[in-house]
Image 1 (cartoon, rainbow, N blue to C red):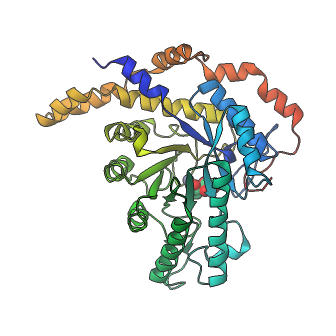
Image 2: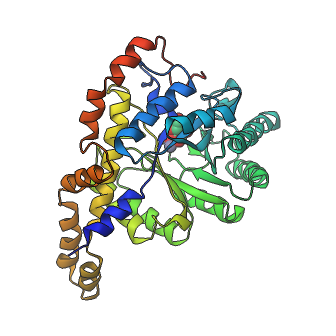
Image 3: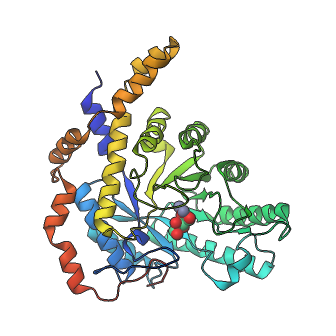
Length: 388
Ligand code: AOS
Ligand code: ZN
Ligand code: ZN
């Protein structure tokens, strides 16, 4: 039998990072539905994120998105986060919202636009220096819409040049995490479309560059856990952007569309030693709550990651390995499915009680009156894409 105290102690160490933009208004290209009490400033986004940590005990950091979270004094913002009981985590760069970036950012054919994009990336490292953040997350909307529009190879050269300049700027304890995405907003070529491209760039860049797996950024039916296993084996998995999807980059709550896939991913993380501090994997959420309330949406997402992790930790490694060595196909599959089919909610409730938390974070937050208080206090909440 698996030892539950080992499972609990692994779960106690799990830290899930929340995206500041999940607390702001968001929507599709058709409509942004405003919600009452939505944050008006980066400080208010951090205050909301702190609520998620307060009730789950598992979300101690918040990722910033620059320029959406622009402030005059980032040290003060980091102090404020600490006062709220959380810290500032990954800094996300944004080189996609300006008119200048119509044909791309760091891979743009125009050297002036490339220089502007690189300046922004370097400015994001300045923000990291001020907040004490270790990770810069790079996602590029760069690509083309039509065959012949630009030179695919030249764009790779331009991208590589910018990435190298960012790497040179990093401090010794900082990393760059390169995120790939199959398509969107570009529809013909995307300059970092898959893990192979991201991995090849990161290999050239060296130890301070690693790949981010956003679970919504693949072609349908892609075996994401294989990618996780491979990258982890190569020590090139920098982190996750967790969310779930039915069709494209839906950014729905993680574990909502396919909890079994999330379990399979978490199993490969456990199997590959991905919870060991030396792997330094950042477990981030990248989600938008377009129609559901945002703070409870984030709490639910954290609980979903915890549940998948608990199940992955429950896999009987010895029994699995014995069945695999014996070529016992059905036996090996049964070991994995036994863990997946375990109801881990009582175990997690017990763990929370031991930590002095309410066993039911959703209910506890709902009772707290926080949602009603912010709805009354805050008027004019911001859309995720607007700087405060
Ligand atoms: C975009 O699709 C990516 O997932 C990025 O991580 C992006 O920076 C984030 O979703 C905020 O827009
Ligand atoms: Zn992402
Ligand atoms: Zn995305």
